[in-house]
Length: 562
Image 1 (tube, rainbow, N blue to C red):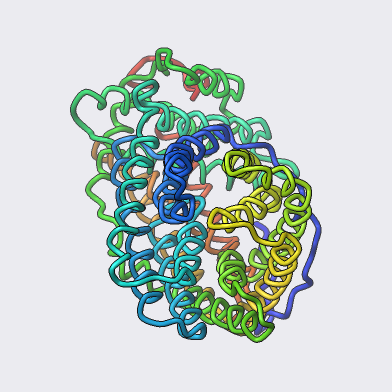
Image 2: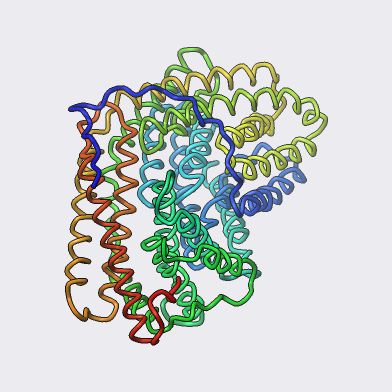
């Protein structure tokens, strides 16, 4: 049994690497859906405002329209609630910004309020795991609204425009349900099967198998979260249970890769494309007990929101401090739009400093390249307001289509789009806009990253200790059930799935803590031992499942394939 060498008493400053930061990834499987939804949500309000010669109001309608970017991976029943909360959250941030703008024009006060809003939006998005694009869109809109002159009498009308566009964005986000009502859950299941197949192909050995195993468990856990959010009864229950059986097969393959057929897993994943019949795995009795274990998870309530907010306190402080200082620095340099620097800082903060550094590099490269793209397309956009709107729509599509390849590539389109939007209210000198945006990008990235370095996250080590303890307890529970000759139906499967979730959380927590600076020593040896013993217990649970399938179906153990 191997063990890792513990880290020193304090984590040293790590080298800031540029390797792989700008590398392009494969596009998301549904990259076109957020892109098309964005255009479908933004175009009608903007074209209506153009027809009435009131493009100066486009910022308020875009506040609602951009809500269509969220929740594309969620089942439609869940998406309906999630999008509604996003719209309400957007309206809340815009309301605070507009009321503040109507009460004061003091730039320092406006930056301070913007920084506090950014911190609140960041921790709420992280705690609720809202997913991409996270807090950045909310912060961009609310920060920009702070610097638009307002009167209290105008606020209700502007909020009404945002709300109307938000309702339209909700309809756009829900429209695909008319064509593929089970699309999100089928995709999540297919991703779990493909990830399990990639790990099974390594037979659980060789170089690079550990990252594939971690990715596989993360995909399976995401699939379970998707499926368990669906109704357990009613018209959609049959689809849910059929997909659950496939996720069980993916989970079994991760626990026993040497006994799994990766090609069969890939064939099942391929069959989930489109709207055809869901493939059957053919192991009914064993799957019945496994699904009893899945149903048992429904009784587990998620941690209260306040408990999820607690560990995010350092991130909140980083965001508030970094955004405020970036805005103040921009003001000190005489930049007319300090919210650009504020939003740049807000976009940097990730799970740890190492990831924050990577995002800072991506943001700077993407924004500076975007400024150059703006210089190329500005003459065309200035030929008329129709072309101005069409250029913004094209850039909107490009941003969402490219951002899954790498954040910097999406920023190349976001930056000129943001610059063009500022001209909806009237022509502005391109040279001034380009200079201000470039300076604010550099200021926001530098000050924002320095704030992340200064505000340490010493709780990261504690969270690793807690995750190790949770994984050990889950392993012990599973081991106790394995020691019983005939555990209750579904109990072993629920314990096994709980152990898999605990190990997934442990790996994510350890990876996040490893990217922090100045933290106390991490229990790396305990992490390695917990993972090794946990995965051995998972494999034993799979073998027990295979033996049970033998007894119920009369087949040979070696014929049982996930």
